[in-house]
Length: 305
Image (cartoon, rainbow, N blue to C red):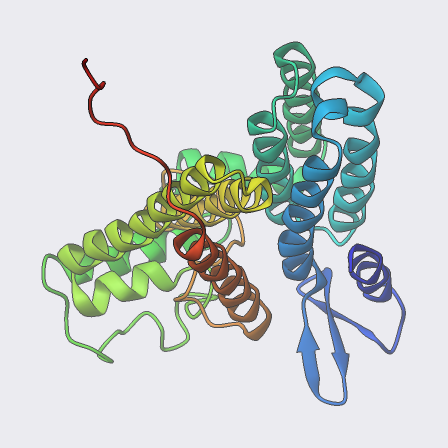
C-alpha cells in the first residue's frame, strides 16, 4: 500500500495525468475523477509506521539503524510532497509519524535530534523560498497589503467579524460569493462563523478536539489490552486530526501563517473526506476489538485472612 502511495505521488508530475492548480502539482485526474495523493499518504504513513513499530518494537527502542530505516523512507515521501509543493501536508505527516515513534519508545536523544533536524529543514524551506517568506510577513501584518499578500487573511477576518455571536444565517454568507478564495476548503471555518456565529464555531472546535481526545482514549485502552497496533495508529491519527484542526482554525483567525490544510469532516474535497472517514472507520474497528476482548482484571482490595 505504501509503494502504491509513492507511485501516486510520482504520477502527479507526469503530463496528462497530473493536474497543476495555482502552481502546484498535487492532483491526479483520470476519467474525470480527481485524486490528491498527499492526502492518501497521510493515512498510509501512519499505517506503515504503526505496523513497523509493532514488528520491530524492541529494535526501534534499542537499535539506531531500526529507527533510521523508517525515517529515511518517510523523508523520501515528504521530499516528493515538498516538490509539489505542499509544505503543510509534509509537516503534518512528519509530526504524526514522529509522534508514533515517540510513543513506541524511541530513545529521547534520537527523537530530539530528528525533531530539531525537521524544524531546521522547515525553517530553511520557509526562509529561502520567497513566496513562503511573503506569507509569513503578510501573516504578521495583513492590513499593510490587504489587496495582495494579505488578501485572504483580511477577508477571512472580515467574514468572522460579520458573523458576530450568532451569525447572519445559514447560507447567507457574503464572503463565499467569490470574495474569499478557497471558502469551501481552507477557509471553511470563517464561513461557518459568518453564517452560524462564533458560539457555533467554538462548539465545532470542541467537537473536533473531543474526537481527538476520544481517539487518544481508545489508543490507551488498546495498550492496556496489548493491542499495540491500535495504540500506535490511534495516537498517530489523533495527532493528525488535531493538527489539521489547529492549523486550519489558526490560519482562518490569523494566529498562524496561511497554509492550505482542510478542516476535518467539514471542508469540501473528496480525497480528504474519504481518508478521514477511513481513519475513523479503522479506529472504530480498533475500539470494537477492544470491547470484545477479554476484560482487564481489576482487583479493588486485597484479601485478608
